[in-house]
Amino acid sequence: MPITKKELLNETGISYGQLYRWKREGLIPEKWFIKQPSFTGQETIFPRTKILNRIKAIQELKDKYSLEELAKILSPEVAERYFTAEDLKIIEEINGNLIPAFVQGFHKNNYSFLELLIMIALSDFKEHSDISRGQIIDIVEGLRDYLPKIKSTGYILILFDRQKDYYATIYEEQAQVYIDSRLSIVKEIHLNDLSNALKIKYRNRFNFQFDQEEEGTSMPFSIEGMGVNRI
Amino acid sequence: MRHNMISLGQRAIQGEYNTVLMAGELRVQDSRIKHLNCAGQVRVTKSTLGRVQCVGELIAEGSGFTRLAVTGEAKLSGICNGDIVEITGSITAEYLESRILSNGTGKKSKNQNQNNSQEQSQKQSQNRDCSWQGVFYAESFENCSDLFLDFEYKFKNIISYAKLFSRSEIECEEFYSFSSLEAEAVNADRILLLTQGEVKVGQLTGETITISRGYQPDQRFKRLPKTRGYKNQNDKITIASIGIMEADHIEVEYVKAGLISGTEVIIGDLCIIDRVEYRGSIKISDKAVVNEVVKL
Image (cartoon, rainbow over all chains, first blue to last red; front, side, top):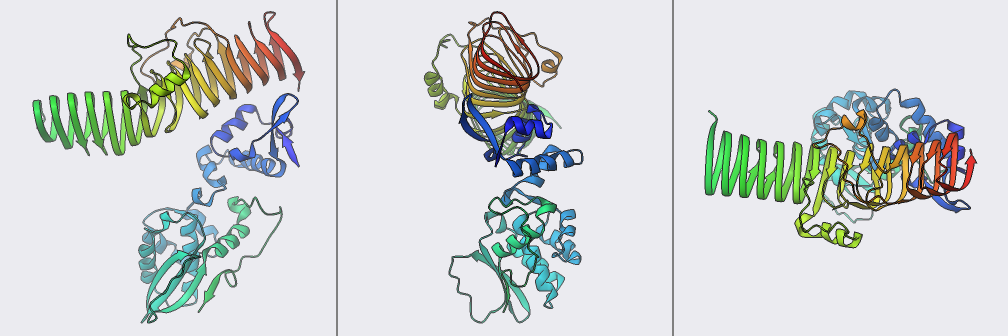
């Protein structure tokens, strides 16, 4: 059930100035401002639960973070969300001992969502194989220049080895890829499945948005069966 | 050691200079120059320049300027930055970041028709001689010559002394328009519109909205980074046409609007408002016509 702008201001106690400043700063998505005809000409309504939750989150966090930082934290778009090295420590699926290797491999201190998925996949692989820290850095360095070009999670990451030397390739889910049969595929990861599991588990922590989902859906995060196939 | 140079014809320079005066073609690479005055074409690559005045064409790549004034055409590639950048003419910038960015100098040409229609002005702004293309970041943007805002920008403050057009919502923290304005919407903490020239906006939203005939610059305006202050242009006073206004503090005169919704609302002289909604206080002039007043 939608909420009108007047009801929203009354219910939350925020001012017009705050509402429109937060919209301008990207804290409230523009698409939530739904204009509909009314007897006064035009009225703006909002998706009730989403906007109330968002304003509550902003009010709680605005003293801790700048509006710019908040916009990144609350961004619904995976492509726009960045994670700091501190964020990595929160994600249990990322091997804490490998974080320095990822920092070294990516040559930076904040990471896109896709880079996060690669770290999770490599952390899991490390747990189940004898891959060394140096080899993980090599894989990250080998992939890192391609990752900014990828704008969705609809990709598959394949890890393969040749005489204990590990390599990776990443390709779109629909694409047919034929890999040299002398190489042995050791892991195949559907990033989309990994992404969904991650977002569900950490939705409250990182405010991941699932507009299509029912409120309150929860799903335990498990790498097994979430697109990570050991071969 | 720094030295001075006068260049005529074609020349390429590299290194440190105090003052360079040139006419013709000049190539500047990996240089530091305090003052550069040029007429003709200048190509600047990976250099740091102080005060630059250029008439003709400036082509720069990955360079910084303290104060850049170009009359003619500027083509900037890579990341360029400047403290004050004034462009009179056309500019293409891959990424230009400056503290103050000005469109023109505000000097009106003799041929400039004061009564240009929007169509004419749009055509003018799309004309190659005065087009803006690319990505612009600035703390303050001064619009001193008719402009169509159809490029990518992020300006903290916009001060418009000339006609400004936009097909989308204009967003910034402080927005001042002292001349004609036609936009789908403006969203800013502070919006001040003078009804000097044609003002037509679909929606104004923010914290404070003021629409009036005249303006006495206050401290908040005076503190903004800018190259010029406000001078009363004594243009024809008109009635501004606004669809919806929503803000905490609204004070308007000479306005025709559909809906005004705010916390503290003052409706001044010569207003024709269909519906006014207020939360805190309201004042309505005897010389205003308000169809419906609603206390929220």
